[in-house]
Length: 502
Image (cartoon, rainbow, N blue to C red):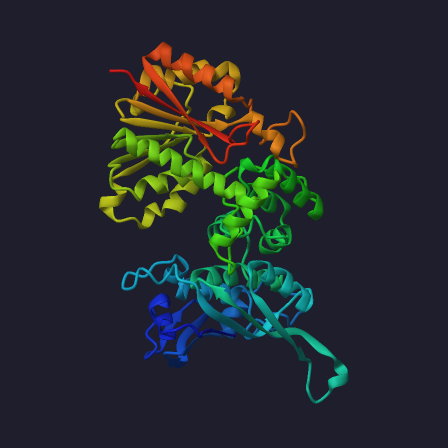
């Protein structure tokens, strides 16, 4: 199977730096089921093409076979030449560094949009050319798909289920690679390996910047996870932030209904930034426009989450903290931001959920982290409503979108454990502003943004709670909005910084 990617941007041979593959050399990588070869058919300053050729071992393919619809299916099939999940695995193995946006020699290159086109000479499209357009065009690409006849010598036989597809647009190379990685098995509507919960992490990790806002999100998620409704529900819930005004739960339930399942949606972490070839600036602009019209979009919700993260990190930096607790760390989004800043010398993530801590470890790549960096961070399992000596004597603690998940009659226990026992010098708290919920058209009056929220407070209620906590434990409270403020409803998220009085 073959994939070619061509750059026609000035200094097109910069593609070699981005992909970490020398245009003057041929690179071969063993994949277990195949050998992947990377080479450059052309490498000129005005046009550069890289080719990924995957030679599948038919014997290894039979050994890995799950059987088929007829006895000889493991031997007679299209897997050696049709672009599929085999090619996705090869992409991740061969171009993994480029997919992460890393380029040490030319650090400015990964963020530069290029004129790129990807050609897949034999691409199975379950749904035809129309499906390829539905998947790629919303990301800003132009799609050309030429059906391949079953046999040119017998045109009356008609077309095969394969197409010669070219996808082109102005985008970053990492966006193109990540989107191909996800969408190739979606177009094929199959995978060559068993799908488990680990696939959700791969999907969210590769598609968090664009999938939540994609109009065909549910189709993509179901196909990518081989129509397993429980996994699809979990993936959609993780892709959508709870800022989406109930959309996570509603959409996840819709995915279950469409597949005939009954699993419950769970998890709230993810990213809903609808960026791709169109670029991040365009998505942010669309989100701003939607917010002005009073109809928040998926892109705006993602932008709000980013704004919240930025506000929390800013408050921590301003406090001068060096040793920080992330209480209720979830899948580690804030921990990743803390690790990127050298000011924070000791970082501890705490969560009651072992599964959340596992996701955080995967997000942070703890197993691959350099020893010096690894020494800066720990993950601890623990309940925030109980005293824990491990959490004492830290400079700062964060409760980011946490308190609303605690039963009201247990808030006193959380207060005592955090402010009375752990007693960090600074505590940063964020929570949704219930007054802003009316600006979410998908949220029924009186409903909460997420089914796990035990309550949601307006501005006066949050200020009253934070002020009372501050008085009881010797802190001073300051407040700031997060997100664009509505004249009547205020900001979507409210933030308090409680600093211990000298």
